[in-house]
Amino acid sequence: MLLYVLIAIFLFGVLIAIHEWGHFITAKLMGVRVNEFSIGMGPVLFSKQKGETRYSLRAIPMGGFCAMEGEDEDTDAPDSFLKKPAWKKLVILSAGSFMNFVGGVLLLLLLFSQAHSFSVPVIADFMDGFPNESQEGLIPGDRIVSIDGHKVHIVSDTQVYFSLSNGETMDLVIERNGQLLERKDFPLKLREYTADGTKTIKYGLYFAQVDATPGEVLRQSWDTSLFFVRSVWLGLQMLFQGDAGLKDMSGPVGIVSMIGETGSHSGSLAIGLKNVCYIIALVAVNLAVVNMLPIPALDGGRIFLILINQGFYLVTRRRINPQYESYIHTFGFVFLIGLMVIVTFFDVTKLVR
Image (tube, rainbow, N blue to C red; front, side, top):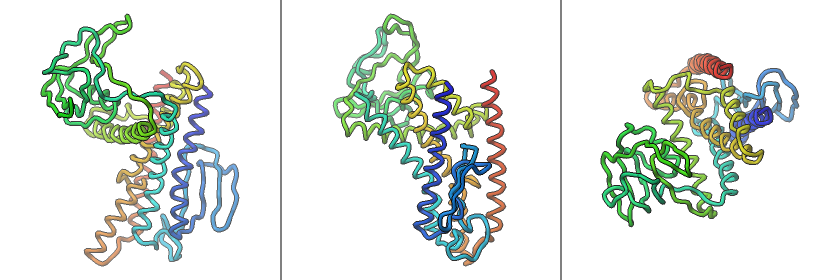
């Protein structure tokens, strides 16, 4: 397990480096001075000054930053972040999340390029005793298009939306021979089936397989990335609705622990590495989405305030005092640190248990 924990920590560092490099390279392209580019937080292990920028490697691998001139303080320097037009600021702030998303997609491409086939949401067969096989119900060859109004792209979508149903029925839209058919209040629920001589609780469906052609690899990689995005929004929705709480969230400690467990329970080192990389791709896309939320101190919060400032200027021909924005981001940073401490506490509690 230790090997996979070390691999997870290393890959976290890679994700952070990719994110901060996105900010760094776009800042340079937009003419913004970068005072320091750091991978990691805490005490400096290595530092080198090159031109106007100091490049640092710090002791704690969970974090990093790209310190731009005028990002958090007022300055008259023409090459400061503060003095650049809004569109350049938006490009720089969006670049970190963009690079994380691209990194996630590329990692999925690498993993899926080694596959021989993929499951698709097309019914291939039913488990013995499935009660709803008929022309008026489901038959082999039906493609599941949507579940309870949620569009289905990959098999993972069916697993999520099945689990969110009322447990008894669901509204399905299927494609059969090129025609879309509705199945309102369709009685599809978990039942006990016997598969390969073992009793199991399933929905009774076997899904079809397609060859892993280059086009299918691209499609599966993209659709899986979007599935990760939908999963983030679904998790946030459940959090705000009270269906999930802080105890259900995971921070770096919980994620590293999960990666270690996943890797150690894999059949071989090769399979373990593939499973770890899949989780890291999920984390990369999650970081891309969460970081763009309009929360102070996150890039999305900074983007939101820039847009508010632009709207305020269009109406009043005056800018909001940058000091107020600094106060908001400081409050947001303190809030996020507090949230991280709470989530980490729950993660450690789960480990102890």
